Image 1 (tube, rainbow, N blue to C red):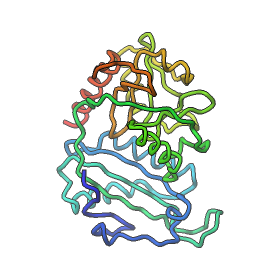
Image 2: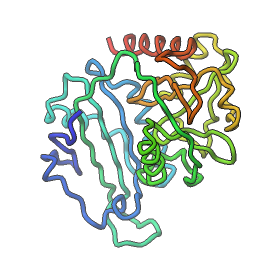
Image 3: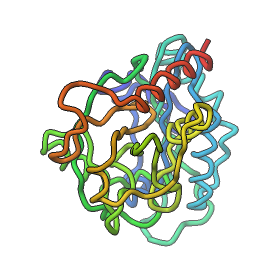
Image 4: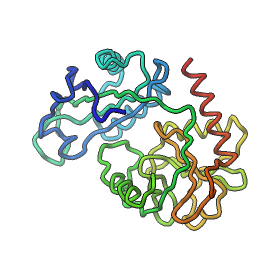
Length: 285
């Protein structure tokens, strides 16, 4: 993936990325007063596009930004065309801020939202073959993690902690229970039962999370939306992360606890990975 895109969509203009500039009084810049979304195009189709756009719309409504998502599809097409990615696999980033206004905490009235988007070449592997290590850290974030806001400092700090420990991700612990990780959802398997934190204000209800839950149903796997206690994670049989670009990633080690000494994948994780790959083929052919 390139570090920067060739083109950026900014307020109905498609610009070279060097020329894309916002006001210093944009509330997304000043307050993180904005919502974002990420989705991937596979074989000229965005995977679960409507679900991603609905989540974007829902989150905008939660923070009272008046923005019509119905206007965005044509703009995405134009951006992909100008970026040379219309026919290629790519990643699309979308961000909507409340707009430009003098710096005051209260929401301003009659302000036009700022829309920014860019696309990058990005090819998902058929199956994520990585066997990753994660570490646990206290979840110090706010109480509205269900909102996909760009105010991600808590997530960024948690991920930076993992990186400095030589791990891929930080698993977040709130009140002694696992919530999610810094940019993925997390699942555990014990005695062939799949567990994940319920979709409430303490996690982002990931689109891939929802897909995996549906796959569990299709595969007749028992699924429980229950938070796992920190001490119990060391007695589970498998664990895996889910996310738009992560897909389904097997966890090999949590802290100093190894699920597998070698690069193995648990049977339930593997079954879900294969089902996810099959779903991608069905949706994008």
